Image (cartoon, rainbow, N blue to C red; front, side, top):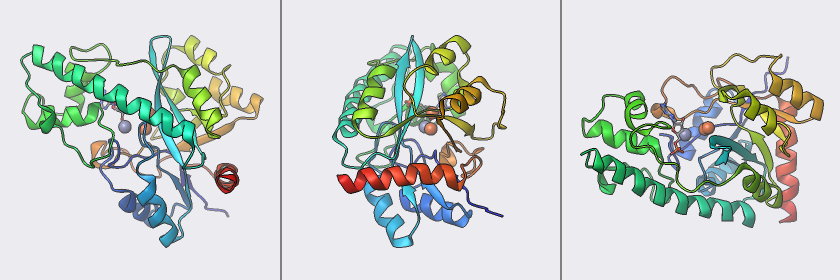
Length: 279
Ligand code: AMP
Ligand code: ZN
Ligand code: FE
Ligand code: FE
């Protein structure tokens, strides 16, 4: 029996995960995973360290990033895989997101200030100097200040979509994101379609030029009869999967709780090797 499992969705200290790239690779190896993709939010900064360590340990790693995008006022996540690490379009999109997040985080802090909650930039835990700062980091600052008790409270009261201190920031569309990914030679995958509540929107996304859907996600059981699985099969798309592991920031999600088999992993891995060689 082939026990190959690869987790294609994970976060490190370079976005809102709690593990370093090295610790994540060790954990993957310990859990018997045979492949991994690190998909930090809007950044590939973990990869310099990750690839150095992965090649020392001979652990197969495929490039990845989880882009934040907008489609009809709805926030959508797009996983991008197997692009060459020096891909200019992918790096340009990451740079665009750095600016978006900087402005957005400032606006969130301003909204909190207006609610008499004084969070200074220095209160926000920065795990790495080059890392992306997102709402979970602001949530941790709110917990530390004693404003809320839990991450869940922070999102429910302040940071979740439509809540008192919610701020969207510049909206980078799904269409634009897909263009960057194509030009950057990556594979574009609809992240966690299970979480998209508006079915009409999902239906329309499935007609866009993606290369796959994340059919296996976190602790959610796989459903063969989901519309996104049927569509993916019809179109010959990849059906990818991963845990969305964030370490202690989302303690109920274990690395490897969702995964892909060797065939799917190799499709991405081979694409990654071929575009990387060509430079
Ligand atoms: P951002 O990239 O700044 O928009 O933040 C997105 C991150 O916040 C993702 O890791 C989400 O899983 C996390 N997140 C979104 N909503 C919630 C929630 N209600 N509770 C906990 N984490 C959340
Ligand atoms: Zn996250
Ligand atoms: Fe996501
Ligand atoms: Fe994620």
